[in-house]
Amino acid sequence: MIIFGTKARTKTIDSGTFFCPHCQTTRSYELKKAKNYFALYFIPIIPLNDLGEFVECQTCRTTFDAQVLTMPQAQKPKRGVTLAEMLNTIKPQLEGGMPIEYLLRDLTSAGLDRDVALTTIDAAIGKERRICPTCGLTYAAAVSTCSEDDTPLEADRNRTNA
Ligand SMILES: [Zn+2]
Ligand SMILES: [Zn+2]
Image (cartoon, rainbow, N blue to C red):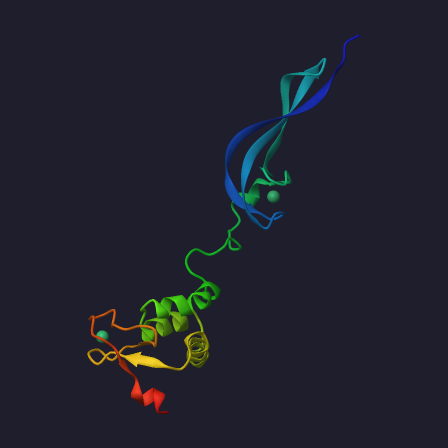
């Protein structure tokens, strides 16, 4: 008795990383091509119709249309520092010698309202400030010299008296 039928065969044609809609994160994928074969005794012999390409997530094993690779990876985590990361590092950055004006500029350019940024800075390092008599930049009370010109900082009287 001769047993014949069709059998689908897949072949990996490419691999890389993509944004997996199932895992909701960047995963590695394999791009596979499926083909139907005419099979004799379950051995594929003659390639029949092309079943097309599909993408398989190597983590969750979900398969997607190959179109998934051309989708904009908008949900991919953004490169660079996020506002949340910036807020978490306010205190170490300022106490490490970063001028308050510089941090304020970074926070506002990241989309934070200036008043909110000022309040956030006060919350992180307190209201006390030291000022550089040479360039006028202000620093956290823990900083002793200006990072721009190495001038010893003075207490900011305008602020502490207010
Ligand atoms: Zn996945
Ligand atoms: Zn200075």
